[in-house]
Image (cartoon, rainbow, N blue to C red; front, side, top):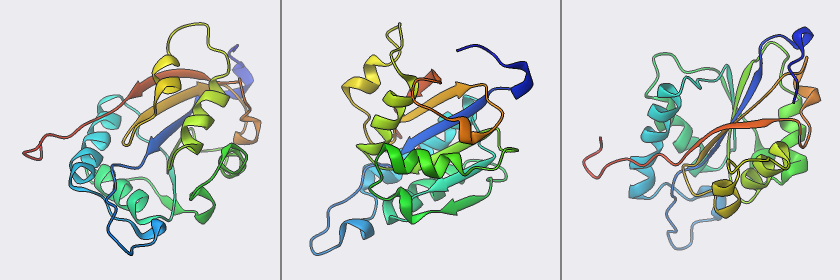
Length: 182
């Protein structure tokens, strides 16, 4: 990936898989809440993003309850959360749908956060990073667990230029909260 000076500063796509969800009987998948572990891990994901300097300009979040709650708890760790758009297309989305939604992002947004689900998010990270020559993708190839975060960077004039193999995976984490809430 070469830096394109006409493109301005690098763009970042931050991908956050929802925190651990519960499986209550008779609750439709879209309506599943977070499990106790998810309630601890979602704020930890917010802290990790802030500590890494990966606060987004815009958030696109699945409409599923577990994704919305993950976003609410993660963003509560920040002074002023960015605007969020809840997009039904992100629920159970595959790579083509995720790319289509991300490509609609306004050009002035430099850092975009997608909050959604697997296997789509894991596949998206792997497709966008392409054939990385280092071991950075190995953890993502192995598993993209709940609360996992991946940050992809590239230089391009607009989000419409987001394409498989065009990004560099710059950071991954699987933040976990403590039992005592810390």
